[in-house]
Image (cartoon, rainbow, N blue to C red; front, side, top):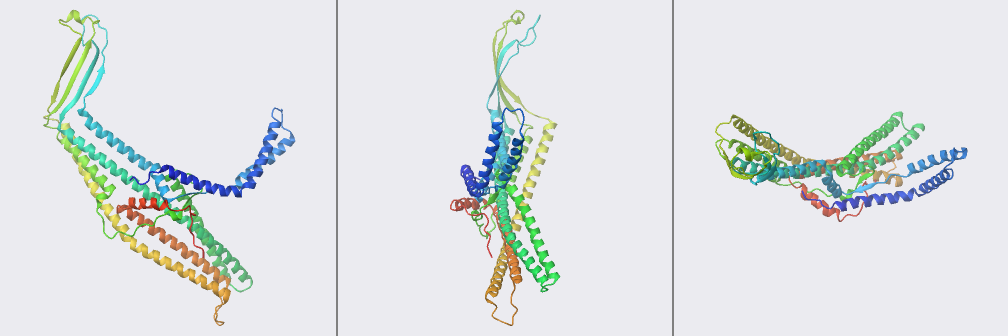
Length: 507
């Protein structure tokens, strides 16, 4: 794909954000570290002062028991560092560390070697050998001290098809590499969005849980004052329990997404977080359906099928077509086998060369091999057609789902705005009154219910926005626009400050 090449910049960005988090945490834990260092130094000096003694004194044992728990507690009290990584940096690191991409690169290297191998049969090969040995009596065989042999293929009509097959196999491997890079980029983008969504959702659930806990306290007080029924109190407790369950579920999903993103990027999962403002906005849905000629997965499938057809053509042309090879050999004979005594005109230096002509007329094995290759090529062609049809179906499904998801996100936005306006109205009535003495006056219980409802609408908006963005990214890949969007994310990320990861709206 060739989208992200600055690995050092990505690594420096990650380390800078991690160091920034470490600095803020070190200021908070300075007293704990200072105390732990003092106690550790005391223990070390005590140990050195008693080094070489035969036993431990009671005082030394007591000090050791006191020192190590305090040092351990101080170390545990230091908060963990949080490291932020931008969207483009995550994509870049994933493309560089993905085993799937490395496997595709290895396939490209293998296909390149296969192409060179199919061409190099026409290049003469040189080999050396020796046949030393002792014989008694009448010598048998050649008394070769050493020999040099040169061989090469001169003409083979099938070999031309094999070279074309290797070249198309290399094209298929390159297309498969591009498809693997896009798949990894899509997976990383979807994981990054999911983790960013979970982090914002955790903040919203924390605020909702605080309101639910406050509502339970208010309902308990009203129940004790005989102003509410036990049913109202049970409902408030049920609401708080549901919020706690939702938070546990989100925490579990956050840990999973963080671990998956760490596996993709090769970074440690502890404290890994996102930068919300680094995520570029996906473009609008495409108005026209693009052709499938720029989709690497389909191109790879058809290129592989064409490669197998070339192999089938080459195997079918093995019959009734000549094969010409060239060979030359030089031999240096020995004299200690007494060949000169039994053969007339014996000489030590010998040279021979010529061509070998092979013309297959009947070979059942070659015919069966040709039928096998044709069947394999036909299957690959049908498999490429299947990949194309499944791709068209998936693209139509993703593109057609975008308008519906956009409307759902709009509805969720309006619901959240309405809930926020209702919360503001309740707060104004609590502070200033409703202005109508006959109308029921809102209570703190109504305010907490409004806060819980507003946070729930905010969580629904986060879910709807995540579904829309993930579908947009999938649509970008199936329409061939993913690489362009990722390039725009690089330009956007270079102009962004290091912003906090969670952009949670406050009620």
